Amino acid sequence: GEDVEQSLFLSVREGDSSVINCTYTDSSSTYLYWYKQEPGAGLQLLTYIFSNMDMKQDQRLTVLLNKKDKHLSLRIADTQTGDSAIYFCAETLPGFQKLVFGTGTRLLVSP
Amino acid sequence: ETGVTQSPTHLIKTRGQQVTLRCSSQSGHNTVSWYQQALGQGPQFIFQYYREEENGRGNFPPRFSGLQFPNYSSELNVNALELDDSALYLCASSLPDRGTEAFFGQGTRLTVV
Image (tube, rainbow over all chains, first blue to last red; front, side):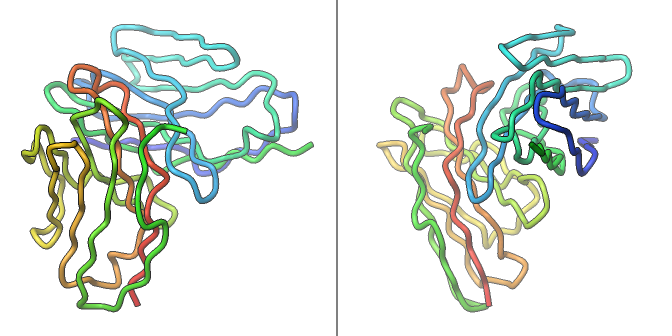
């Protein structure tokens, strides 16, 4: 079935790296996504990775995908206070465009 | 700024009432999806519209219905509101061949009292 899980909370200091983890259950996932949600706002697409890739880098963001373990991670280098938000992992399945979201990880960056 | 706009931003309704939420898609996007995000949860898929037809539905009762118009704008209607319908309702638009990139509006916060 479709199930995406994330840890609830992560606290880091400004300038450190943050790693947010996600596990999913459906091995037929086609794309996996990371979205950011700031207070009172909608969802901002940060990056996504196709299921036949194992890594994608985009400026400060690095996505790692371990298909065998169904594990996805988002690394944010040089984390800034403006990165404080809730981060959602999501997947799509073949033939359909709905997104299945995790419960979100709240990232708190302290000065 | 994604170009997807939703109205109203906030709304308070009484249990049993009906509500209509609106979404204007990003220019050129003919696929619209609606999601419900309860407090502290991830968004849950309600349904998707493509070229004015429902193109998939999540686990929501029939009192949740939608429309898509020729200009690709969309409405979400909820009848017989229940307290548990209180949530942030998010609209997302995409191109059918670029479903990988869904752009979300800022959402409508619905409170049912």
